[in-house]
Amino acid sequence: MLQAGWRGWQAGVRRWAHAIPMPCLLCGGAARGARLCAPCREDLLGDAPPRCRWCALRLASPDDGCLACTLRTPAYDYAIAAIDYAPPGQALVWRAKQSWQGAAARTVADLLAEAVARDARGLPPGCLALAVPASHRALRRRGYNPAARLGRICAAHLGLAWSSTLLRAGADDGLRQHRLGRAQRLERGGARYVAMGVAPGQPIALIDDVMTTGSTVEACARALKAAGAGPVVVLAVARTPAPGAGVPDPS
Image (cartoon, rainbow, N blue to C red; front, top):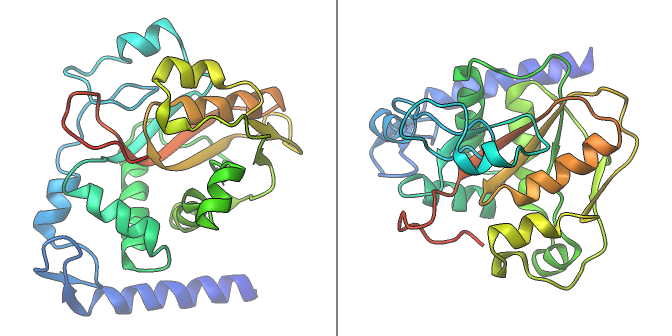
């Protein structure tokens, strides 16, 4: 009863906020609810490009997967990415990661929810949402996990139950992830993550802020499947374009 009342109050606040004219988060033009103006939203979403079923990289044609993923099928079932980690969306994602309770975080959650709604595969019924855990090193450095903070907001926008206990980072091996190539990251997998208490066959929505090579979500999916999880769907706010696209590495 109280939860239903709280959700109703939140929905009312969101409707009220959307009616207030505010500057667009990207261009500063006229927008509603301190979100995005129509042209900027169209620039970010527009006609959704065909993407690889697994790594979510853009494809020239609507094939099921890219060559790399076809040769080495990932442990997770498929991935949905809202936008590319490239201008103009790159700045919005960065702001969302830094000011996780602000308008930027709510906006990227909206974008991810819309990407899921547009995707014909959608999500399996009864999905449980959780975030990619931060390594112990990253937690010591930042003091928080951006993926978890954004993940909670995204899960709420998608109407998914949330868990912060099923998946955790394993022991640090002393290697810095951003200094490794894709092949090294995939080989490193191992016990980077540990899953416990997963109900047999439980569908999982694994939320990440920026998907760079797919090696991190691959390691998470392996741990979840080994613990008995059912389908694992990766939901990424943004996907780093392929090397050579001129976009800086988010790490």
